[in-house]
Image 1 (cartoon, rainbow, N blue to C red):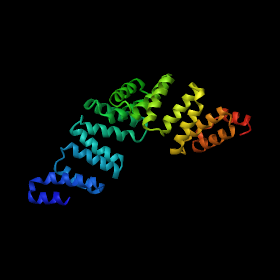
Image 2: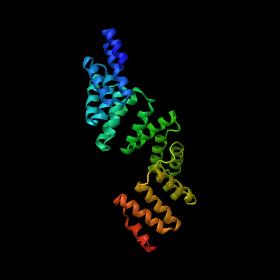
Image 3: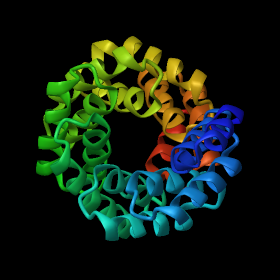
Image 4: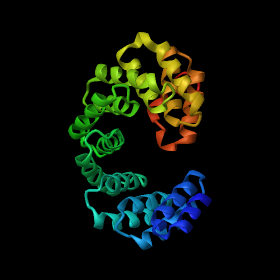
Length: 273
């Protein structure tokens, strides 16, 4: 910051460059409020610089919340509707609330970002996730396969293609994708849970593998109700109904909507409910 101030004092024509440098220095120092103030000064002097607006939006999201960040990006969008970083960040910010209307807005912006850079793995990841969650399976599959052509070991790509294959009734392909996803993130609770379920249904002889997967995931996510529900299923399959009941109780304590009359009848038949 001091050096940029000295440069500006020595040559007033370097004011914009000095402001940009000071803002970047503040951001590197994690002084987000000061960085935002300096970027705002820069924007006030030249509001046509979209890249500055994007940096302000990222800082606004940290400091003042999503709506302030999205409002800034919409101002940038009015200047350049196909700016890659603007559309990417609008897509990411619209995904955060997790609602269907916001997810569809995110898909709109991410599709535009994909036009300007078809090989951006962040765009492909976020778009593939959003499309899968929105039920647009064919388009999601195309996007995620494009991602894996660029990054064959991408965890998100393999994990979400596993979900898609499972939805399409192709369990063996789903297993292949899930197993590949776990090579880069062995403790992912969703992938572990889904893969363990498939092992139980497709490969009963892999009961030990299913249990190991779930226990490994549980170490990182001890309060995940779905892991406990899957561990209940493994224990029941092994005939250990006391342990099955323990995991079931923990699952429904964490997520009451998982209660199942059929599960409770089976546990009651074995004196555990």
